[in-house]
Length: 332
Image (cartoon, rainbow, N blue to C red; front, side):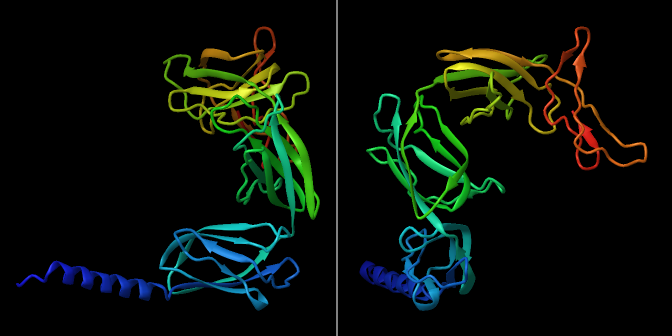
């Protein structure tokens, strides 16, 4: 078959691509944006990843987003700072997809400045917030601190769990504000100090086989108050290794096996006044102790606390999840 000249082949390919892209532009996502009272929001922005052009809601709060067929992360932000943004991951747009009514919660612009203990701005700290009831993370776009340590995020009015995470590779201690109350329309935290901490590290291995133990949860609590610290990267990796930053002080260190693992949980005191490597920590394999506690009439006893003591000496073992469930059952 006779070959076409190169320029003709390129031209034909260009026409085919133009034809495809033109046909793909027919796919669209439609919907309406309202507030919690059902009042349409005019001027909200609907955007998607992948080079899709953002659109703004018109009268009635309606929108039509044009996109090639595919899967997108769709974000919706209200006008100004009065509404909490939302993100909908993995939205498939093929043909015409009706997204229905999307309700944006009333929000407050929460701002502040993150400084280290020398008074210098902390750049690229990350601000995260979670619903204290469901545990779901609240979508907070552009939530990093700038060159001056400043941040500003829109959060729902009410109670949230607020986290300020230090930039990766630093020895700064993450900050946790559980039950933080958000009021509107704006709220300033002022200067927030993120102190320098210490690297706490070690390796967990099976006490018998010396095999590394992965997926174990490590917790640290203040020895005097029992208040648990907020930690980043507090699970052992595939080599049984862990490393995270903690402040200076006297603490209780907890080792908690993952669900279904039969190693024995541990706790012991530690003193941290600098970088501390706990070395290799052997964790003993154990046995599963389970049962059900009932009343004399056969009703389950809910919330009963079980303790296990090692003889001789009446040494109490650390047994997390040691209360009976709704059926009176326990598993230690």
